[in-house]
Length: 282
Image 1 (cartoon, rainbow, N blue to C red):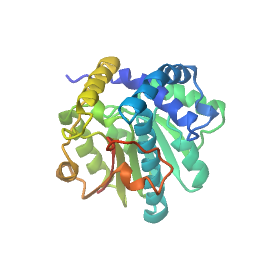
Image 2: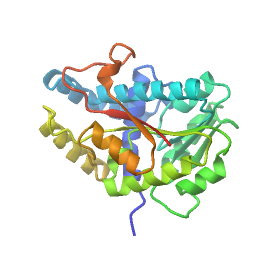
Image 3: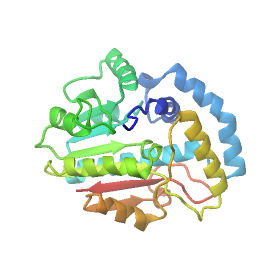
């Protein structure tokens, strides 16, 4: 039986949450001692990486966050999306920000029990949970349980609303055979809505990248720290598009950070970007 406990990833949620807060993308709601400790412990390594390699973890985190925000806002404003589920939400500030910005939006944050309870407490303390903004438990690896994807969506979502799903910082923690099952299930579930979209970040396996050896070292270290199998799934953009189509998505667009250097307030880097944001519609 497959292990459905991926809670070892949670410490990264504190770090990324603090990166967003330090750069004005979050709020004091998500000011946590765990996040601040991890953030300041990581600063010497970030500075060395920027000076020596021309990129840093923080640069990548901020690039993907800004681009996902941009893609999701366009879907709300131009495609009429009014219902969003953010899976593995961690300490993402999107639910708070988007519900304040879009009065007709329903936003559900979903995660594993420990992180979900922590976030629910933070949001409750600040009076931010209501009928439009809720938190629910989910486990994308389970089938036919109360926390399984199909069960949660059927129980929690309005089938008449155009719906978009977000995952950030999740995909590469699973091997392809595991994550492809989630993608296939998600594509099928989204077809039940008037319109369905899925937006995520991912990191392809860039054999051509000048920092491949350093990247592989980082991947091995992250795998050890999170007790997870960090995997780089795709070789190029065409591979991404073909694979997602095979799994049930009718249209996939791959967003590259360099295309947004002059359009969004995202940090730039000297070498080619690593992260990609995928926008999929069923």
